Image 1: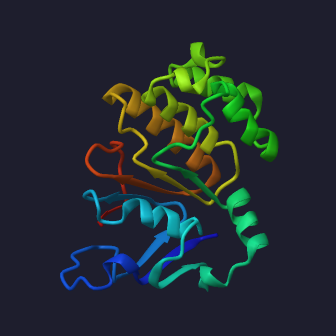
Image 2: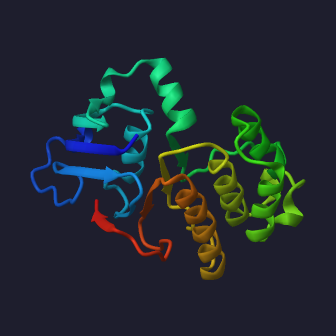
Length: 214
């Protein structure tokens, strides 16, 4: 996948609004593989909805979203399975980790499905992100900032053309935020992937190719 396009897209819940001021909604926007994007938003402007639309999780929008020129509304289940396994990685704002499992078990569930990253690489990420001592801790007993780092490792355990991270550092200090950005960008460059970061304030400090106001 090389291009994600939004063509006059708008959440249906905003359809009656006449004062939409956005670089994304009701615009024609291209997100290109290999480039980095920051989507800045205020609460209630549809940031998490945007993530869900692009991931095919929801379709309550007007307009068009297309991957490489093909309207995603035409995709069947098998196409979405392929996209989520090989082309698109997503770190949800709410993380969606399993609290009863350990940090490593949460990561391994995905990596055993994809067989994409080596255990050596996963261990190295735990070390880099400062949570090596939490490998065997249950997620439910970890802080949200620690969980965010686990979720990032899990997100990177697959091939992808785009990685979409929804408020990935909301509970991290500047030092850990920088480390996580470096881990993500190193893997994204390795795969030649596009990176889309969303934020309602605090965001990863990186050299973005484009900054969009939602």
